[in-house]
Length: 283
View 1: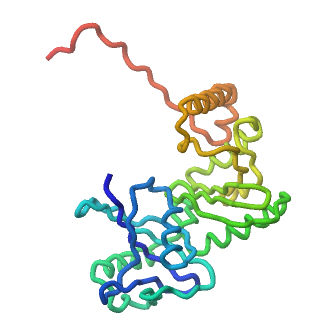
View 2: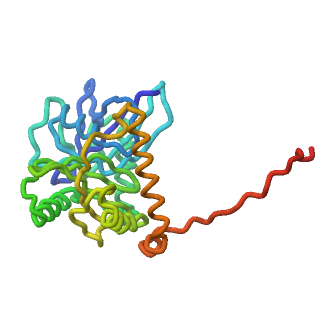
């Protein structure tokens, strides 16, 4: 498995500027190397930025995933910094976007120029992916605090971005009353909100409870189920038990096909394969 070289375009919290770092007398994009992870996982990227630069960030989107070069895969991400702009460590500085960042390395300058050109030509969030736009995270945090307060949960301690990719964005919300998960989906996946709510209502013993929703924005908040993540469990019997429960849910839904179709689920177009001949095909 090849290591991943992450190169980061980090937006300033409040002005048109990005973060650059000094490397052998030249200004470069911030970068770090990690093991390969699922492309939707972004919490470790934000953690790396916080550890190196003291910045709280969220990933807006991944811009490029280059073919391996010198046994390293290069990925470029766009991030947004949040907060009041804490002092940066030595060698890091914010550079304005009124032109090409002065002194930037040629390769990074090309990446920045391409990013700026794409941003200028963009017509907004593609397929309703509002989580790729600056300012979205702050808006969601405000909504989460109010929505949870309306549900009787008033102590929001931490909101962490876990996943972000083309289909959805997931946030972990830690409160004094327990853990919650927020999710938003693309416009083309809008039915997930209503279907999840339907399943939570009719199968509360299997599907996590929905605490709050904002249907027009495709936002919903769920309570966290007890226990750890299945991917961290090595007991095969627990995997079998989880698969059995999921199978039971699927069988139960066979009696609710009409409801699920009305909520936006598509009907599968099943085709029957022709019977196999006992004789070999002619050559």
